[in-house]
Amino acid sequence: MAPRERVHVNFFAPSTESMKAEVSVVRIILAVWAFLSFGIPTLIWLAGLGDPSGLGQSYFTEDRSVLGFPLHYWLLAQGCTIGFVLLCKLYCTLWDHLITHLQNK
Image 1 (spheres, rainbow, N blue to C red):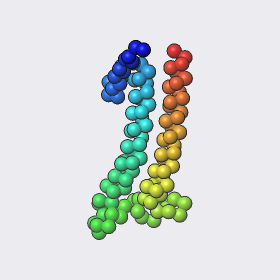
Image 2: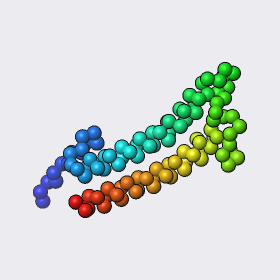
Image 3: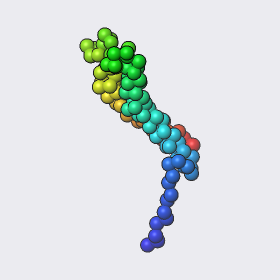
Image 4: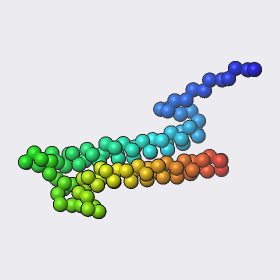
């Protein structure tokens, strides 16, 4: 039995067209994930820095509500959770599009 060839895969320097397409899908998903995980909480935190009372009051923490929840809570608790579900849908859609595109070549 012949020994198997080693395959070298580098995420930062994909070698084939299919690898480049796969990495582009992963990069899009990672960028959206980073915004959901770090961008929204950071935005809410930065908005509260200008409060002279030091309590972090801002546009997000005032009397704004979504479905009965304060806006900042809804964005972090339900909004990000819904965003992650939509992110999974986006990943599946992009991956299906990629597979279809690669099979038609």
